[in-house]
Length: 277
Image (tube, rainbow, N blue to C red; front, side, top):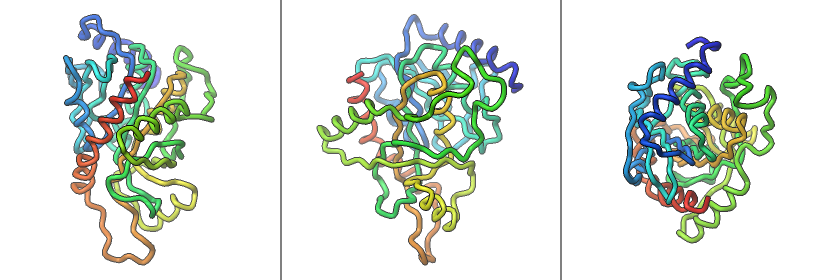
C-alpha cells in the first residue's frame, strides 16, 4: 500500500463499513489481542464484517486473531471491536498495521481500548495477571513517519499521557468492585516474531519495562495523534526466565491458553469500564 494512497484507502474502508452499520454510531473502539477474542461473544446484536470483505484491507494471519470487525452493544454503548489485529511481523507496512484504527477514528470513536497478550519482564508478575498499561516504550517503527495526515492530527503529537489517567482511575475503581487484582506497568513493543532471548528480557527490564509484546504501541500512537483517549491492558501469559534458569522455553500455544483463561476477567472489567463512559 503506497503512503500517498493511505487517506483514500482509509476513507473508502470507512465508507464501506459505515454502510453496513444500519445507522449505528460506534462510540468505543476495542482491539482484542491473542487469545482475547472471547469479549466478542458478549456483544449484543452484533454485525460482523470480515476484514477480507473490505477493499484494500490487510488480513490478520496471527494465531488467535479471527480477522473481523464486530459492531454492537457492550456496556450500554455502541462499540466497534477488532477481533484480531494486524502486526508488523506479518510483513505489513506500518500504514497497513494502523489502518483499522484510523478507520475507527474516521467512523467517530470517542475512546480506544487496546488489549494484548504479553510476557512479563517484571519477575514479580505471574501468568494470568492483568496489567493496566500506564506507559509504553515503542521499539517498532513509528506509524507517523512519512507525510503527516493533517486531517487526523499534528505533525508532532504530544505523547506525555499516551494512556488516559481518568480511564485508568475508573478501571481501578471497577476492578476493586469486582475483586479483580491489577498490576500497573510499562509495556515495551518489539517487532517479533521470534520470542525474546534471556538477554533481551534483561535489557527490557533494565530500561523500565514490566511487560513485552509485538503490538499495540502503533495503534496507541495513531489514536493519540487524533486526540482519542486510550485505555490499555496486557494479559500476562508468560514470565521471563530468572537469571540462570536453564530449562525455560517460550510456548506459543501455552500463551494463547493463558490469555483465554484470563479473558473472562478482562471482559468483565471492560464492560464495567465502558458503562462508566
